[in-house]
Length: 387
Image (cartoon, rainbow, N blue to C red):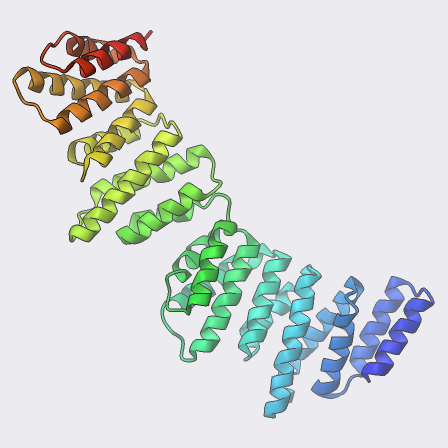
């Protein structure tokens, strides 16, 4: 059967048969096949030609295989049936044959062979039929909930769904792949999820903000890192950073470890706001809170840096209040190495704002002999930077 099919096709190609005629021959060969063994051989011959003109015939083959599934009851027939569905599904994906997407989804839902189902998922991704983003995302979400009765089957399906969502490139696929990266799966599947995650969407901000709003501190931090490394527009990254900064201050830590994670979340959010030179006044309260109640000097300094890089009236007035308080304490004899470090940073960041609102506070520091020469000089330099 396989030899005859190949000879017939090669003869037609040699004589320059038209594309439509060749497609008809492909279809005739498959229809003449009897039993799953011959159908597999016919499908293998067609796929082996690597001719996109066979795609319609392969789609017909997949549709027929789905209709005749119950006809193959023996173990050997069932195994060959699964191999045939997998072979045809892969070819349809490689050819990006859009009309076959519904048949591929039916294969995902109906065929009892995990590798065939996984291949059908991957092919839907290659075709990029966005109608199936949500169903595939839901399938992966369900798989993420816990080990399936047959762990190997669950892993194969998850692997296929992850690759499908990566190829579909739609932000709706971000969250299930994000959670798959830390799921119950083997290292191979989890690593694939981590590799696929950055490729799903250039702007994953919306699902990331949802994760920041409702998940654990560890997941919030991992999600914000993904946002920071993404290609999202600056304004969108700032939006995620603001959400993270607010949750970082708003969530009450249960223990020391969670307290550190929330601080790391706030630090990353502040770094992002500084890097993006965000001028959103919604950041001012969080930046001041990090300065006043930060877990360490690094966080406190980042809070001041976020105010300085912003430069808005609200940020400048916040720096002014901080500097005035430090100056009043210095005049009353309260001093320490840490306070001096914060004072210098606040002064330098006040200069970066180039905002006239900080002039009076800087003038008081420059005239206060209780400060060290270095801090007085920093205040004078900051004054020069303000128009």
